[in-house]
Image (cartoon, rainbow, N blue to C red):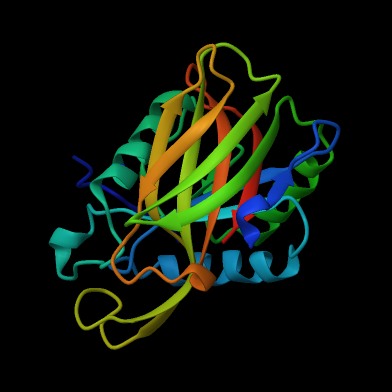
Length: 242
């Protein structure tokens, strides 16, 4: 059962991974929180999907929102920017509300994040569609407290932005207070940094993003996607490994 968020107030240097424009893809964004007792089943679902989708163009990002932090337990992975992103989706998607756990696929369909049938059906449908934008990432490097990655977005439409996420692949967390007190939660695909850059007429370039404390290259990956800033639709995606 969803819990309504009633207190909402955001040598591999030559690595290249492309998402061909003639294939479908699915960007799954899960808005979750360690303070929400309804969220662990959604976290477990995306973990299963992540494992089953290895090698497929399914990109999972888990955003830990911060509006639960004032209700007894501060989620160490939470950021105000992720709550703000969720509120933006409520403006983009007609009829959408802000709650946890909430899943949004390719920026256009939202539903309760623990609804396995809905998620699997949505993935099947989106993987059968044709991507509108071909996104390429290359020359991913981490040094000097930041990572840089080159991008090229072929076929990006007007009013598009490049969204770049640094994702921690997995991490456990012992919750001491709040609705999940006493539980050790297993998280996957945790968004640790998020940066957006307007593409405008610059469909290629270099993005630089700060690294979090304790960064280890083998524990992270980069997921990027091209999003229409008018309606929120995601038109292409890719990922890169360090």
